[in-house]
Image: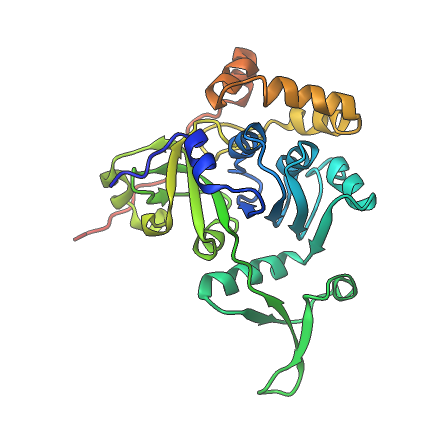
Length: 300
């Protein structure tokens, strides 16, 4: 049975006020389009979890969608702070939990494994233990030494953007791989957005690239250019100019609201957003093909 829905339908059906939401993707394939649709639909009181919140959570906090953020690094990559999230935390308007990168991934691994927690070796970030009571030390029953434990993270909804998927949600992902697989298995529901919807035979032709299997996916949405201003390996480049521009926009509440009015509420969907960016930006972000070598699967 096809799981294809429009992104508007998928967000309406699977993201509810008060949910814990995890928008996956590390450096690239960040699901900005889904975040914008959540803003347009006025979802509230969300707990936004993500290893690197990036600009999408800055925008969602600015729009009033969030009550809490859970993160392991918070910043505008290569530029500076996430001004809006940081200001909201400092003013006591936003709850927060911080972990190391390894701590966040370990939480997802525990959730994906059906375990209540997992141990990890001590890291250099010992000050996090003072700020986060969920990070606990226990005695290793084998060596008698200490290990750190973190609780499982099982988001109500995970949103994962991929390069291509079939109608059943089996998805290919390549380039920098982050926590997409772990969060998809840990979450209760998974919304998949994809640059391309392809025939099942394309997915089956390269099974080792199938990072997300369809049986854990709730909805599949065809959303080209969904990751802008981040990038999708092999489809379009990172819009570094926008990351610099956002640092200025986010410093001014009036400019932030103007951005949301024009680029989120002012466009109906991602296609309208992409067309609004214009031909010059399309050309700037275009990437030349660089194909991998063929793989022989023999008697598959």
